[in-house]
Picture 1 (spheres, rainbow, N blue to C red):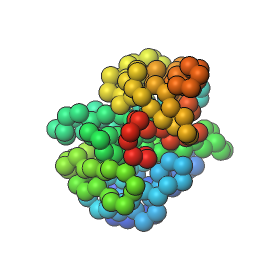
Picture 2 (picture 1 turned 120 degrees about the vertical axis):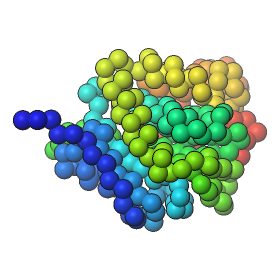
Picture 3 (picture 1 turned 180 degrees about the vertical axis):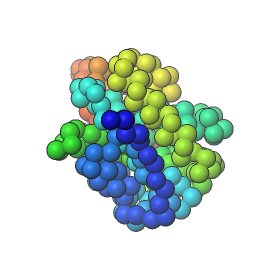
Picture 4 (picture 1 turned 45 degrees about the vertical axis):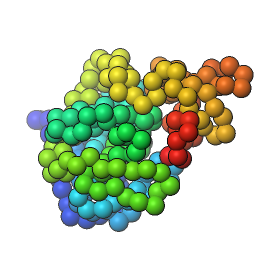
Length: 241
């Protein structure tokens, strides 16, 4: 029986592309299948936050079926690498950075975000990779600075699908080493960067073996790992993010 190829679909409007992509996964769609919408009415971000969804920006979700479940924690990192590569291929602005664990930043402002959701069910384990990028406009009223990249959303969409599929293949075949190197080259939190989280302050030290952020706490010099699902973290002196 021939292998089923991944497909992509662009729709005018939905509540959440992540929900539609999850439904594809539950029906057995192959890795690399994606759905995107021109408008979302109930987009969401990490930690239960709402994701503003103005038309002209990118709302996109892609299905991952990792061969090695223990590498699934690297999928958000790989997604960030893929997003930066796609924007650069389209001629987007220089200086785009990845803010651990899930944001794209340009200068001091947020330009996009990633929400990965793992699902276990009768069709096996899969991950929905949701990506929102401010292509044409930046939402206000978020309690933090936001910016847009000035790129064409219709041009970005196929490049992002291509780069995501390539990064997922690399993660499956070669492990996280190459993805980690690419991420750290464009990370906002370079080793030694002062950061704050949950009332604590310290400095970033880099990623650990599972993609968590290693930090050294100022008050006692203890080194620890922050997990993506635990807290928000920001550069010292910056606005909440």
